[in-house]
Length: 182
Image 1 (spheres, one colour):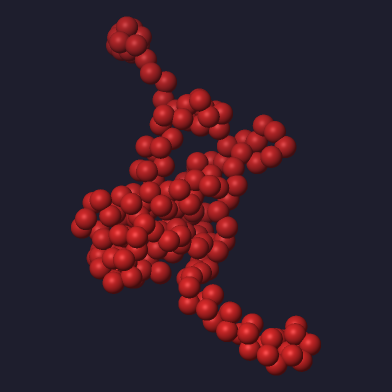
Image 2 (image 1 turned 120 degrees about the horizontal axis):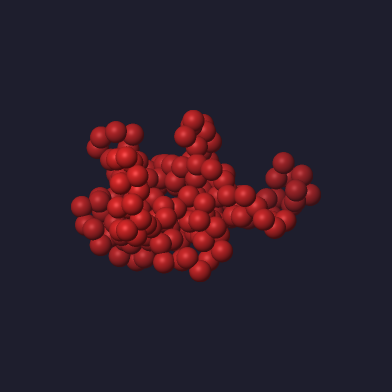
């Protein structure tokens, strides 16, 4: 096929193959199978305009490069899980990558990114369980914490109104408790 693309130019074929080898070595591309939707699948917010409320993560997850101090440790295959500062930097970079697509990732998307981290850096795998539970929960917590102050964002506001708990005053709670006792 390379010969067909470059019309018999042997020199260009070699240059192309060298470029492909360099590209393959520079980045790790992970292709994961879709996670089956569970019976407790997260609900998608309804779209009010012609556009979807948010985009889905691509099927091929490319783990971004991390800050220099973290990347140096990862390249040396040192576990960063016992150093909270490094763990938080990794989660922050993963959050930023996912937030480019959506502020409401599905469970499958959290799992997809967590598995991609483990595939690229197997020494970060959890000792117990499925191997990526810590990364999964850390990403979920980060998204929850980052969404909390974003009530001005229309997507966040709509979903808070739909799924959020309404705060009740103490008088309302006391009245409803008395009604229940009667």
